[in-house]
Image 1 (cartoon, rainbow, N blue to C red):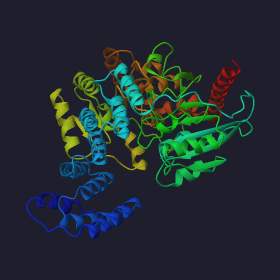
Image 2 (cartoon, helix red, strand yellow; image 1 turned 180 degrees about the vertical axis):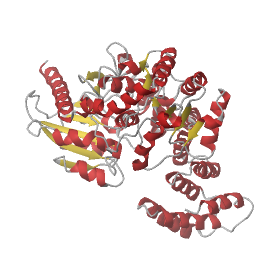
Image 3 (cartoon, one colour; image 1 turned 90 degrees about the vertical axis):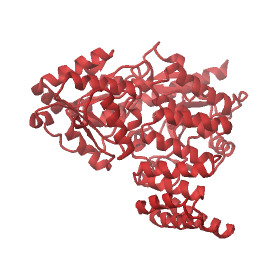
Image 4 (cartoon, rainbow, N blue to C red; image 1 turned 180 degrees about the horizontal axis):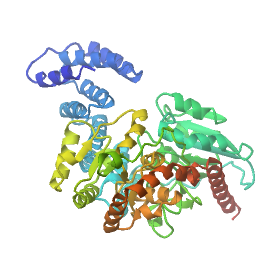
Length: 539
């Protein structure tokens, strides 16, 4: 990708006046470039956009789409520059503003992302996708407590998903019959979704459930095909509007409809708002309420949502599975490496989560820990090179931690990601937005995780996972306890090495890897929800 040329174009575009080509010819070339981009031919698309910008330096769509290509290639700074230029050329372009929000999150600037969405809604109050993105961004912000996050989700629903009148369904209210079970996902071709869903789909009892998958993603790929093979029916709904998608679900006679996306991008919550199925359920990918009155249930566990702790933050009724919220399949079974501290002579703490989760309170606590252990270091993965990495170093310097005590790396391939667990002795769970898959992968690769328990699901994933692995001693109830646990672990290297060697077996023995048991618990929960609806029909 010729990004140096793109940067030169950005510098030159204001300095040179180029005669604009014919509008129709330019539009045709732009449409061709977009088709190339959508087909994954990024090099060809990038060249086409560059040619357009040579002739029309202020072209907002070419700038925006080049920014998306830069983002996909990992050059977040260039993406920020290009998409910012697109918005300067066309301030009313809502799609470009949405893309800029994602770039800001990738730079770790969550509160700037929130401010951008709020400003966008001021000029485009009907932008449902922008408000949905604001709901997601609010989950990351340390400036918003659980009540504020819940209020944002309810505000979205009130604006974009008004309560529909009670529906009449043809579904027979028989509590024992075979049920038509539908799953809706923004993208089934997602490795993270796949590692949680494949075993569940495979193990669903066909005598009790007929499986329908509703895919809202762009293009089916390897994971989509794997999941598709586990279902009786596959439906593509991306091209359907909400009313048409709801009508298709009704026509399939779905009894229980499960949302796997929440307010993640390309979700179909407005389809759920039309209540196409008598029982609607939220599960797996989203750590907060959808805000929808039409979403009847949320599947959770006793640790993510302890009874009496977080019910007030959901429009949904909570259905707690007995043990865990997750059914995990490890992606890689690489060997567990020896404890790095035995070779290094100092403890290395590790963070493997996206930079958006590195809140200021978490960084302040981690800096306190590093000051308490003057020889320790902190390894931070998945930080984009350039402005984000430099800003992170400055944030730590503000807390008295010099750059040489930090090892900051950019994102790597999934294969290399697992190799990176050889770099850390102890992993630090961020807050308020905990890790999820990263926590399980840390434990699977022998790196113990330390978490700070919060008050809502977004900040209690670590509590759930560590409890299910029998590691409650690594759950802190306060920042003081967090520091004490970390220092205790760091002080005994032989014990830490023994713990490292035992962690994979702990994960293997946990309910999170008991796919058959998890699926049976999930099916029992679905059956309970169905019986509740049947009971309402009899009244």
